[in-house]
Image (tube, rainbow, N blue to C red; front, top):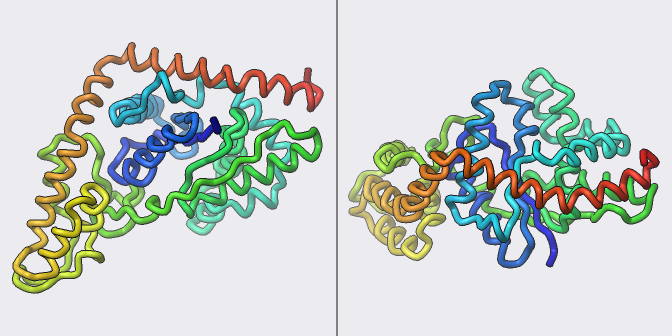
Length: 320
């Protein structure tokens, strides 16, 4: 079976956009691929410099994957920092990556445009991402269209390495997930912690409902017909409860149904979708030792894949 690999950076607590845009479709891949899911804690260091917070976020991300249905006996769940082969491979790959290629990376260009300070970690971020993929021979990497460049850069690096040493690295293909770019936040923009418009995934039901009621809507009177397709509250409802989406849309188009009704419907749908998972998430976080053991076991399985590959790479480049 082919290998699919995906990761999430623990720079914050997972939110609804992470779930709908990345986690849920990534979990579905387990039906067709041998899946690796990793927590990209080294990547998080480009923006997060609080060790205690990083540890909390890492535990939250691990508990999120497990609470939402990841089976650690079937798929592999691990922490990036527990697989040292990834960092070793990143250095080797950096010697096959041109400065011009890194200069074209979207994250770097955006940081320059915003006048942000550029660390070496941010600049070489695509190389570490390539190592995350190539260390395990992943065939497919699920990404949004706006992240496709990362996989394209990984492919270029792998091809350059293989040209020098033979076909040692699997050249991965991107699996484009269109939904990643279309999950709206409270203000209608793409849901993102950088915008402060997220719905934390496992917040208490009362807090979730309160935030849902804050989702921006237009000022169309209750009695008037509405256009549901352009409203963030309906867009979210359609993702969470597709079976009931058209019925809600018809009520909104007909008039006589206000946006508050749609928000209540969304809050109810979120509780149906996430209520049981929230209980599992809270239990997982309470069992710190069990969660740590699950990550260690996942790292051992991940290293079983990476170690023989790295032995061949070391031999090829001449360091063994």
